[in-house]
Image (cartoon, rainbow, N blue to C red):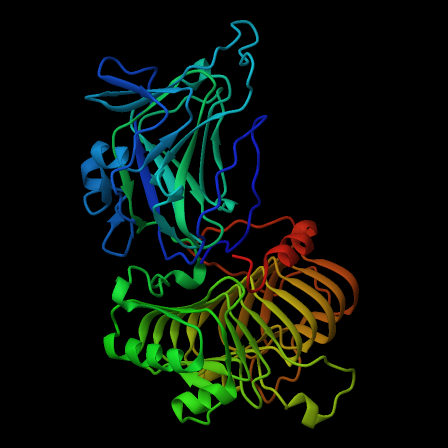
Length: 552
């Protein structure tokens, strides 16, 4: 799972229009590419201004059956299994600025700006903002029609030559919803000609429902769109922990398998319903507070966790806004392909808040997890009052922990529960953009296998942060440590088992007492894996603004 992040709304011209607010929710795993033909005007056909009125468009859900082979020789071969939007379909999901002229011809739909450009300066006269085309957009509802997830890729596939030198400011591609920009942006400057088969891609930074594609039309010039292809890319992996299989959770869940719950009784019914339909994709939306006492009354179980069961797969449990809260009650995950997102979980007595045990392909994203305020030199009884906020035990692997806020915790994240090096799997995990605040240790304590730990913010850590224990190899990049006793090291190893190793780069140590390595003890090859690092000095601001429940 690439970067799981938040990018704010950005203006690229004076007076850029803001869209009206639409419903924002949970997205699902997706990689997609757009096939696009660009030209200098469209000849003939029908012309109109102000947008084509949608005719009851339907939501677009992309799953693993929609994929592309980008190594194939022809367009048809590359996108044979992709979700294809035809011209007629595009017209039902289309919006654009009123000063754009639309011409339909055999070549597709051509969008031409009518802005008058000064022939000398090549700048527009009057209104200087960019012009916009919105695709997969329901104009009647003023919302997008795409479900997306963090780590998705969006691209424009241009298979006609385009001379952007004849435009004023090139071409911009992005993904948005009512909250604003949710992807990185791709810009092709006017000085850069596009050639046949060029891929323009951008990365989705956070999960989103009701998203749409936005193309910034140059001040002068035109863009012709023939087909749009939506698909999961098979030969480019966005996420090291995601390499073996995509973490999609409830992607593509049918309406009857989407449950919104407000109390423990409804949640108990929803969990049982999910168990009865698995492995069909399911989504549970939590819109209320679930307490331990209420769960006992509803389920009859006195366990401090909700046992999802080893047979459960393809499930997303997500909070609605900032309302999804669990007080004294956590989760035990033993199945596969499960996403826990946008939940607040606190004070699970004697237990992990989230236990991942022998489970694979798990994501914990944008959650807030905390216990009681910690103190220096605590008693063992106080330290053991709560267990980890997250644990990954036994053969648990392919896990992404992203954009969470952890605080007030003695034992925060445990990966691997014993020091038997021979029994430890070569597990793979990613931890990025998490905010660790006022914690004691285990951020994480990591045994066995590989992990990528980057762009996390560690603040006010009483003991040790990253503990590289038995047999682990950790790439630790661009993390910000502030007021930390010990930042990176290995502690309390036993017997003859090998200590952990690390590859470090770009980390910032501010008021850190000891264990501040600047050199690596190993080199780690993650293979076919792409990701984007935020500058380390920007990490505190980015992470505090974006980590935790209620921030997607």
